[in-house]
Amino acid sequence: MIDRERLAKLRAIEDQRFLKSHPKSGELFASAKKSMPNGVPMSWMSKWPGAYPIFVEEAKGASFVDVDGNTYIDLCLGDTGSMTGHSPDATVTAIREQVGKGLSVMLPSKDAEVVSAELASRFNLPLWQFTVSATDANRHAIRYARLITRKSKVIVIDRCYHGSVDETFATLDKSGKTVAREGNIGAPVPLDQTTRVVAFNDLAAMKIALQHNDVAAILMEPAMTNVGIVLPKEGYLKEVEKLAKQFGALLIIDETHTISVGPGGMTSQLSLSPDFLTIGKAIGGGFPTGAFGMTQQVADSIKKMVELEVIDTGGIGGTLAANALSLAAMRATLSKVLTKENFERMIKLGNRWADGVEKVINQYQLGWTVNRLGARAEYMFAPTPPVNGREAADAGDFELEQYIHLRMLNDGFLITPFHNMALISPDTTSVDVDAHTGAFEKMCSELTAK
Image 1 (cartoon, one colour):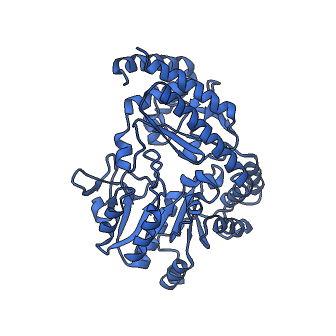
Image 2: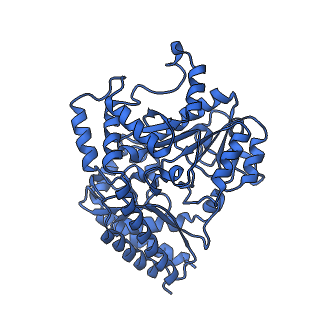
């Protein structure tokens, strides 16, 4: 229903608005290109729409200000890293206090015991270890799974994302074969040597993939989030648990994004029983950190198989893992920010955002759909919700997405790259949400005008 010629004209208007509103970002970008590839400190930042990325001056709560003085309602929130809101007071206070008492000493702090006990309570896994990121947590869980099972393969979900874990950059080709995902950089070996890919919500495919009896671990989000929100069918995750046990594979649940449903993520919400659980980003209030939990049985198996003399040379851990500063940030964030009360408010506003977007979509007969995941929601360019990653990917429209992101940015809203997802923080207000709905309505009216 979108007229592509009209879309191109609207995009040209937004390109000019962007240049007019962001001259200082343009100057910084020109200078940054002298010392950073594409003028950005992380390669994927080049994908933001507009002539160049905007440069941020400061961020607090549910908003941020760029170097040109433009203020934005932030519905991206660091793609979950700042789901707590930017620089939550409790976390900032804890970090400031800890900075004067030591940053990293390669020894436990009192906060380590408190944080691990809190995570154990939330996710019903008794034992925890800490990393620098969720990517590291996933890598470590995979290595332990291979150690325990003495098997080599990892099952991942088609179109998944679990950070920069080599085994996860795989997809299914048209014949159903596991191949490297497009854009995969420098894969150490062909992906079918390490990985077997199955579609989300497909139990039959999961069983077939496990029947080779060479699978050490199944790594998955309980709901897909990085290709758009794809929700599990009723009973699907419990059946995956049963299949994992039946074929001797360990189940790793990645809750890094799906913690948006509540304090204990979907693991608590659906009473899941994984062997490992990985998480990062939000639990540190935006401070780099990660963690993974495990069952007592898994921990006992690891202890039997790892000799103390060589425990530091097995590829698990890192010099800055479990540093005192990150643990202080996690303790404050979990105890004072990511609380049950805050989640209830965030989820209510998430539904308000989704209701507003859904009403506009119906008003203009756009044939799109809205998916919800607690404090997170997203609209997708398909008439029905996708049931797997391929359907979600096929519903994408890069040209349209780039326009929408640029238009909303020019109107003062940042939504999650690189699809149309919004995340609600404890600091987000109903005024913020309704302002987005108004801007979204105006955009849709112009998109569909004859």
